Length: 351
Image (cartoon, rainbow, N blue to C red; front, side, top):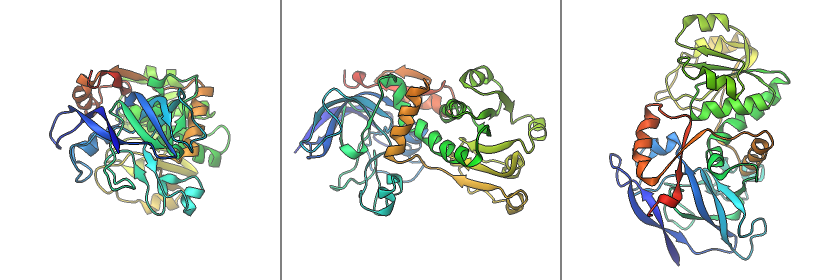
C-alpha cells in the first residue's frame, strides 16, 4: 500500500518543474514518516535532472537536503517520536551489514547505497526526493536537527554541510592544531567550508575567482581572501597551506594549486570537474603531497556535523523561495547568482 503527497517533478532533461504527486510507501516497522518543511536546492540536483550526469527515469522529484517534523513512526522505531525535528540527506538505505556500513560509511556500502532520489530502492521502485510535502525513510537514515538550528537553515547542511565537514575533520586532524586551510570557491559549498574550518580552529583563506564576496568570506571566519585571477596570488601564497579544499566543478591548474601546499600538505576536492584532470606526479613527489577526494559522509558523522554546527552557531546562508520559483532558482544557481543556498518552503508545493 502507498499514499500520495504533493511534489515537484522534472518531466524531461530540458523541461520545467511541474506540480504533481508522488507515492510514499506505508510505514514498515522501522520507518519514519516526515512532514517536510524545507528542501534545499543542491547543484547536483540540477546536474541530475538535466541529464548531465547520465540517463535518468523521468518524471523525477529531486532533493536531498530535507528538514521537517516526524508525524508517524513504525512500531520498531526507538530513536524518534512524533513531533521531533529531523533531517534526511543524500542516502535513504544501505545493507547495514557490510564492513563499510559497520564502520559508519553507509555512503560506501559494499552491496548498495540507496540514494535519496533517482535510485532503485530495495523494493525496486525509483526513489523520489525532498521537493515534496512528505517522505518516508527508514530510521537508520534519519538524523536529529538540534533545537539551536532553524529547519530552513539546517536543510542545506544535510548535503553542503556534511560534504565539507567530512574532509575538514579528517585532514585537520591529520594536520594538527593551528592548521592553515584554503577553501577554493565561495559558493554554497565554499561558504560552509569557511564557517566549519574556522570553527575547528583553522586559519582560513578563501581562494575565489574575484573579490566580490570578500566581505562575506571574512564575516564567515576567513582571515584572508585572495583572487585566483590575480597571478600574484600563487606567488604570494606559495607553500602556505596544510590543506586545500576545492569546492569548484571547473578545470583546475593542479600544479599551481599544489604549489600552495606545505610539504606533506593535502589538496582535497569535493567538486567534480567536467573532464579528467592530468595528474602532476612531479608536484606530488616534490614535497610528499597528497591529492584526495571526499564524498559526503556516513550517518553518524552527519549527526556529529549537525551537533557541531548547533554548538558553534553555524548555519547555511539561505534565500527561501516558493515552489513557483524553483526553475528560476536553478537558472540562478548555474549563473552563481545566489548567496548562498536556495531553500524551498515546501508548504507552497501544491498550495
